[in-house]
Image (cartoon, rainbow, N blue to C red; front, side, top):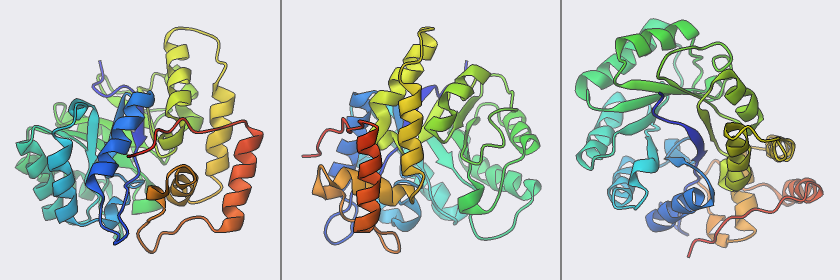
Length: 294
């Protein structure tokens, strides 16, 4: 059986007025998502602005995260182009018995499959006691995992390479590896993915759809009629018209202004965009069940 199953949010990060990571509120938000229905949370992923947050801040967050009652439910995103920073963050996490990671190949340069395999080789040479979910997101990093590359890594490192988050959507319909988690990156793929044997999803919009996504997942597992999938997909489609980080923060900030701060060059939706988003969500009778971060 695959190790990572169910509904996972790629959680947002909360910043203070000086644009420093607000560690306690970021963790509280992630815990709230689990309370709302997520099986777990991928923290410090792309939705969490990980590429813009310092190593120092990430290490401090992980130190506090290790004390959470939901410690076992977290996957840690690395979000570095630097191999050495990636390994350092993972080693610090391991010391706190946090061993599940979401790792995207470095951005910017052009890679072949053999180069990407070498990247993960170097990580596992330094940290054999880890669980890695590959992160396939060509739009952000410029590299698209091939089926052959994923199969090679999973065969080479069956104890360490345990799954893939597929946000490019070229894998989830055709990849078939025993005891391997396949997790599309959108609610639009949730039901079809489950029908194909995928393990669940890891998505940005589960910051607001946790409860709805869990209902779709549970109804599938319990062989019940799907009453919520259409609404779930329509909500995701509404957010997909905008930058997802901007959309998440703009939506959540309407209930709690702690979400107003965002790291440049990212920004909140402009007033007209926010108005249009809320108009569309109101037509769908969608209101977030989000619990305020105190």
